[in-house]
Image (cartoon, rainbow, N blue to C red; front, side):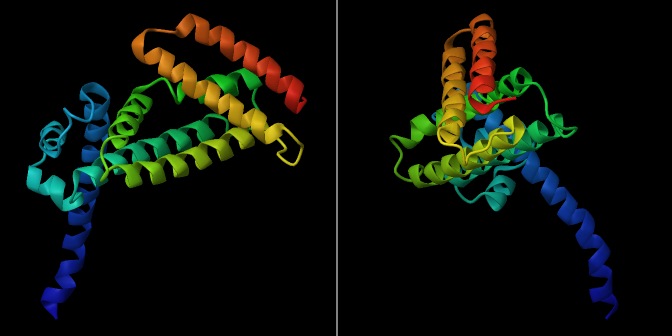
Length: 202
């Protein structure tokens, strides 16, 4: 009985270390994918960056596809949480909301996701993982946008207006991959905020 009782406290630190290892792997995977693309991002490369053995990486993620889709989903969830917390105090100016949404598509996460999309077009094993991931992230981002903008989707055209905003933000993210598009992006954000004010009301 004494052996069973003693296993409890030991399991706590072990589980905590496992969670830390998993988090390090996910963050390293996103960085590798954004920097080196799909071809240059292997489990071994990610494990080395995360400071863990390849065996430990494969214990958490048995396949390369599961590692990278889990990594992008993990960071997307963190960004969604951060976005909600940014405006937790209540309604914010639409320009600030549009700017925050656009920022989702102009950083490391978007670059990593873009690499996954391109790879999935050629990799049969990867495609179902990425398709499911994109659908989940897309739905969650849309829900957040509706909430932050105070949009009433029962009004005809409002849902399409919100989706158009997100499509525009993705396009700005693509433009930013090749060159710094900050100046033009600021003008577009201002214009879209005005469009939303007109379409959604005060």
